[in-house]
Image 1 (cartoon, rainbow, N blue to C red):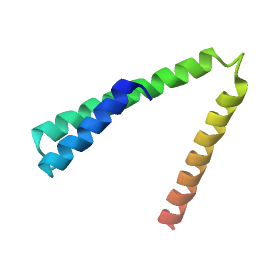
Image 2: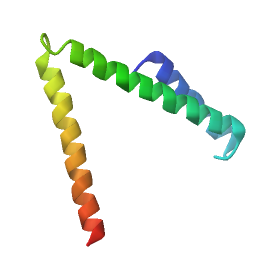
Image 3: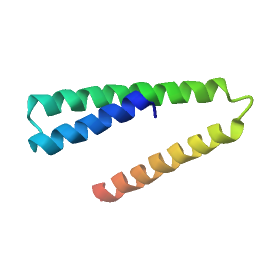
Image 4: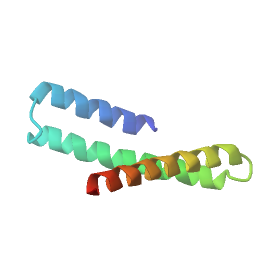
Length: 83
């Protein structure tokens, strides 16, 4: 995670602690900024991982397996909710 993303998440939490209201304009703005920064950070991480796949294939495969586990458990959870 980039420092900018971490900083925006901390600011979001600080604003919520101060206002105690999700609908407050400052909290909404902080949430939006944090969401955008986290998306940018995740995209940049995945891009760097893809560019470095020849040299460091283990980290790429580790990330891939972790994402597949999450999707699989979510799919099982959704199936159990439907029945």
